Image 1: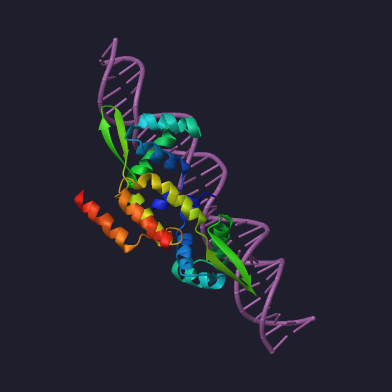
Image 2: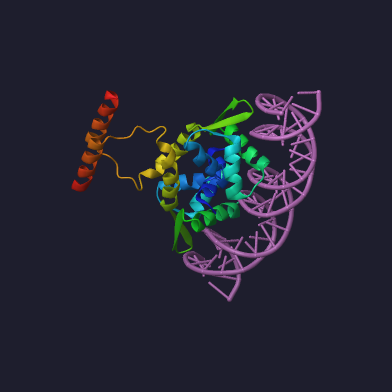
Length: 108
Length: 108
DNA sequence: AACTTATATAACCACCATATTATATAAGTG
DNA sequence: CACTTATATAATATGGTGGTTATATAAGTT
């Protein structure tokens, strides 16, 4: 499933928003989503599965809990696609500013 | 239709890519898309309609032609949503670099 | 006016994404 | 071990997206 298709679903976008706050157990995510979207537990679980399988989220087990965390790798892809269009609204930094920025980066 | 749903379709993404090169008549777009995706003229026309109605493209009439151009407004929305996550991979410019960049901007 | 070209719309259909209910699994608890 | 809790999977139903063919519209051309 293409990254954009994954992001096409509002439930999945919301889950990702929850996960940027930090990792959360499936149950926690399910609780919030069920309140906001009124869907069943399996529905949320299926969305989590899609996020896992498409690389947007990682899981680790903690006892009976499954702890989810965001993985931004596919979001970077999306960002890269947008890059093509960004020229239309983003003022570009000039070379001096870029130079300074990169030196500061090197310094840590 | 939400911006992310619009971008969920590969044909529509490709159309947008064509339109960043500059405006194109419907026929031109249709020709390219039909080659790459093997779908009918009405199918392409329907995608163009979705792009119009969701604000991704604008049209003007030139005789019998409909000339399409990209409108990045909804893409900015998408970009804004991504902003939340960008912190995870993008090194931030420090304040000095930002200051210099903005002064250069003012200068033109 | 008849015909062609460019494009959109209408009507319809098929498939797939996402929901549901029911159930499985796996880890804690008394 | 029986029971509960946390979560995932299976099986199935359904609505909507995106395709098709047929047709309308509107502008050029002869």
